[in-house]
Amino acid sequence: MSEEIQVMDSNTEVLLEKGKKDGADTIWDRKAAMKTPCGFGEKGICCRICAMGPCRISPTKDKGAQKGLCGATADTIVARNFARMVAAGTAAHSDHARDIAHVLYMASEDGNYKVKDAGKLMNLAKEWDIKTENRDLYDIAHEVAETALNEFGKPFGTLKFLKRAPYQRQQVWSEQKIEPRAIDREVTSLMHSTHIGCASDPDSIFELSMRTALSDGWGGSMIGTELSDILFGTPTACATQANLGVIEKNMVNILLHGHDPSFSEMMVYASEDPELVKLAKENGADGINLVGMCCTGNEITMRHGVRIAGNFYQQELAIITGAIEAAIVDVQCIFPALADLSDLYHTKFIATSPKAKITGAEYIEFVEEKALETCKGIIKEAVLNFKNRDMENVLIPDNKSHANVGYSVETIIQCLDRVVNSYTDEFNTVKPLADVIWAGVLRGAAGIVGCNNPKVRYDESHITIMKELIKNDVIVVASGCAAQAAAKAGLMTMEAKELCGRGLKEVCERVGIPPVLHMGSCVDISRILDIVSRVAKEKDLDNRDLPVVGAAPEWMSEKAVAIGTYVVASGIDTFLGITPQVTGSEYFVDLLTNRVEENVGAKFYFEENPTECARKILERIEEKREKLGI
Ligand code: SF4
Ligand code: SF4
Image 1 (cartoon, protein in one colour):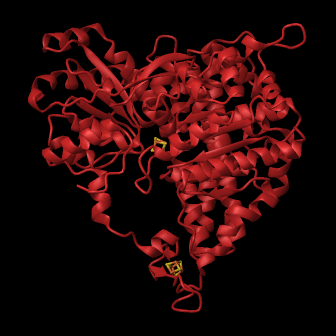
Image 2 (tube, rainbow, N blue to C red; image 1 turned 60 degrees about the vertical axis):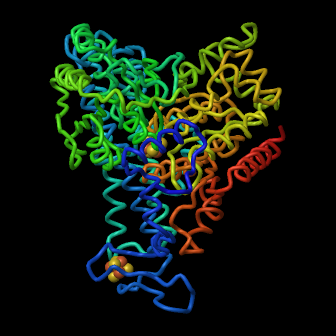
Image 3 (tube, rainbow, N blue to C red; image 1 turned 90 degrees about the vertical axis):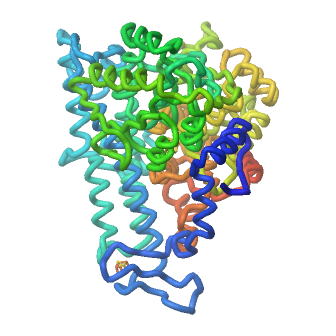
């Protein structure tokens, strides 16, 4: 066990202590065992994309190897490595979205999957010029799904959702030649360009990376979010709780972890099945307690208020409570370490996706055609496992916080309608938000997203930055594990308005919202793009002009690299609390943190100190305000 336990949550400390006694190996231990990370990897200057390598470039100029065997410089290698992270991140989000499009394609009136938000379906059909008059709802749904599926590999044109951006932004993309065409095509092209002997110019590699990342934000992720809302319902504000204290001593606890809402939605229905609840009671439990983790946790809390067990770093801790009957996973962000860890307890670790079979996990394939039946079978396994729990070895920490979640763009707009002046203004717009920003009541807005990372104290960067921003009248929207950090810290409650500056407090009171709004999972960052673009359009401006920033204080995944890149390419400055593995090329660092602004009007900031990061965000917001003359 690492002696340097880097946590800010007492639940974590308590469970790490228990894990130590139980002989559990956690990320904290593995981090300690890793010792100092490889300096070449850390700087992004090792390359193994061909079998002449691996090659590594000396971090010292004029000393040691300055080029790989093929002649690639540090600038090329760094740019290529970064690009491949973007490609992988885009692929992950987009493949997730493709599955949801397939599910919409198979939705039917009497099937497991139905259209829940017909209004949203109709709006999207209209947006995509799909005929709706005198047509069966499911015919429309299937055509929308097919159109979405074509976005992945259509041979001509550019992505449909690009038109949602302000026209000024569309112009930037066109001038920079970074308009994404088809999603899979961009991923493939980027992998091609970064093959040995293809692109070596770092600027061009980064342009291609932006085009690919845009195919995520304005393609895969946006399709994923829109179609999930159509199928599972557009989130509305609801109350929930967050942190490991939501695990219940006398219930069958099922931990759902991963990303795919087609799976988790069905698990929610299956867990409510009266027969299964009865079975749980017959087995000595009070009932079934489904709790969520990471983005699956976000999806089901946004739509059903299912309680959040925790974020990325708590996946092991949940099992260490000794009270999880089954940890059920689909794709992405699942520690393979959960297999060995579950063996220490009675927990059944069940993998369900053919895309993410995990060594040591039981595998029950989730088949969409038999969705409810499969999910009921999985829940039954968990229920029957309750009797195997060692009650003597259960420790569920008390901490849990209340949180209000479910802030889709539609819900935010509904909340804003509460303060519309009905004499002069229309309902159902973002004008009230733009107005308070222009009046200076709110100084700006920040989207705080991303993961946990052992390079920084767990959750601390998220919370420090959020608190500092709301104190200074910057409203925060959050997604992914950052949102869960906020929920655990109580920042998603109405009471959190007391932590805000006067302006934001007033807005929270009048509009009836918490100062940190949960906007969903990582693919739901497309909701953030949507709302920012609506505010920009309201003022006939580009995103780049708005006092708005993005931040990923504790990011770790390739998906986060794709997200950061599409946010910058969308004209929104992005603050990274973890420096990406690019510092082996001063040229590339300068491109990301400086020169890219000339091309797309936004750039990256690397700042690992959260207080300093918040200061820089506030400074940048004021700079933008000054430029606007507001
Ligand atoms: S592509 Fe070039 S730098 Fe990379 S491993 Fe091959 S020879 Fe080395
Ligand atoms: S925020 Fe990061 S760790 Fe959390 S689910 Fe998303 S990608 Fe995974």
